[in-house]
Length: 218
Image (cartoon, rainbow, N blue to C red; front, side):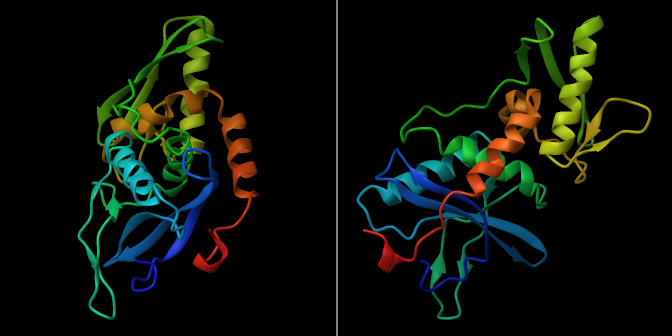
C-alpha cells in the first residue's frame, strides 16, 4: 500500500513490537476534505505483519471507539482500505497517540472490549467515575475530602491527555468537538490518574528508533 497511496504524516511510532518480530508500526494521519483519517502501517514484510496491523486497527475501532473511513484512492487509481476516523470527524491526536501506544502492548488475539468509566484510585482509596453529561462534557466524581480533590486532579489529567477544555466555573471537562467519546475516556482513565508519568513515557517512546524503509527491514 505504501507504494501507491499517500500515507500522510506519521504521528506516532511503535519502534519495536515484541509481539511480531520487533517490527516497527506507525500511525499515520491524512486529512481528506477537511477531516483527519488515520492508518496503522508497517513497511515490514515479515510473516504476521498484516495480521498484527489488522489487530491493532480492530482494537482502535473497539477499544477507542473509532470507525472505518471510506477507502482512499491513489493517483494511480489503486484503492487503499484500513483508514479509520473518529465518529465526530475531529482530530483528538494527542489522545489517539497515547491510546495507540497502549494498544501496541497487547498481544495479537487479545479479547477486546470497552474499558469502564469507573476506576479505583489508590490515592483516594475509592472509586472515581467519569460521567457523560452530554455535548462532549464529562464530570469526574468521587465522594468526600481527598477523593474529591483526586477527581479534580484526574479531570486535569484528561485536559492534558485529550486536549479537553474546562467548563467555566466547574471541574468538568469538554471535548472541543462537543461530542461524547466514552470508549476513549474509558481507555485513558488509568492514564489520567498519573498524567505526569504518562507524558514522560510518551516522550521516551518518541525518542526510540525510526520507521525503516522496506529495504532496511528483514
